[in-house]
Amino acid sequence: SYNELCEIIGGRNVEFYRKKYQLPMLYLSGFGTGILYANFIAKNYVTMTGIFHEYFLNQYTQVKIINEDYLWYLLRWRVMPLAIAVCVANLGFRRLTATGILLWTGFAAGILSVAAVLRMGLRGMLLCIAGIFPQYIFYVPAYLLLIRYYYRYPQSEWNGTKTGFTVMMIVAGILSEVYLNPGIVRWFVKVLT
Image (tube, rainbow, N blue to C red; front, top):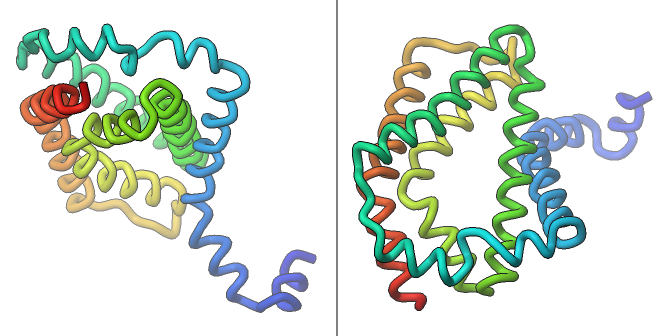
């Protein structure tokens, strides 16, 4: 059995490491799948269009972003998926929701990484980092808290402090994405081109 095998090859340590690295491995599985998909299935599409195209980058440096419009756009695209994930998880699909979030974000990051490297090389990866800064400093802890709770439920408990922290981090992420990120990306694109 599985337990006997664990005892033979290392005892409880195997089970500890299996549980400890389960969530990162889900993300990395999605990431690897995204890389393979972008390289072998959608390579032409990934290299022909998108945000790493010179035309788009030139347009981005010249366009004026209206903060209020961008804020409403981000509220729809950041809060709605989070609200849907919370609703689905609270319907009883907690572990499935956590797994889906990790696989999907890994898959999307894999595709984006390949597109960046194929189109711009190392500069594309640096542009990706600039594109998620500083908002991901706030989004990642909020999502990791939710994912960990949903994946480890019922061993993990939720409380008002965690709710407050999550809401505060999402709001801070959205505000930094509206008011800080466009300037950072615009500056970075000017430096790269």
